[in-house]
Each structure stands twice: as C-alpha cells, then as structure tokens.
Image 1 (cartoon, rainbow, N blue to C red):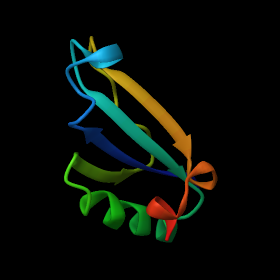
Image 2: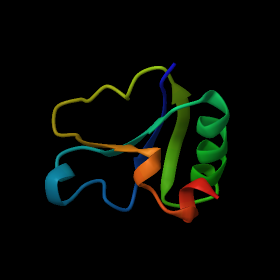
Image 3: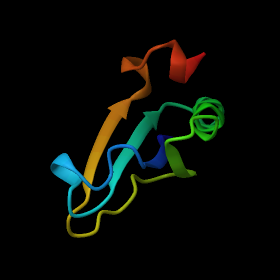
Image 4: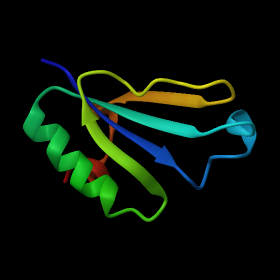
Length: 80
C-alpha cells in the first residue's frame, strides 16, 4: 500500500505559487514504517506544520500549491 506524509511548509506559504494559499508538501512512501520515519523528521523541522500520515495526498484549496515527491527521490535529511 502507498502512504503519504502530508505537511504544510510555512516558509513557502503565502508567496510564489502559493501566494494566495498554502504550500503543501506530500511525500509518497512505499511502507507505513517509512512514512512514520519521514513524519518524525518532518515534525522536527520548524517550518513544517500539520504533519500527518494518510493514504492520500492532502486536498488542495483554491490558491494552494502542492508538491508530491517520492521518498526515493529525497536525501538523508528526510530518510535517515
């Protein structure tokens, strides 16, 4: 099953492509254990808020900008 770690990047929210909304960052994970590990790392980052593990990427509202990345594309900062 595929899992997503969803979060809001408060540093990027409110300007650029997310100038009228939130900058949402969703990381696609291949296992629940991987998702929990990445969620723990996201919670340790001060700019990431509303971190949650889900079976779907976070829904967008008008003005939001969402980035979906596969965990395999990320560096050690996220994956350990």
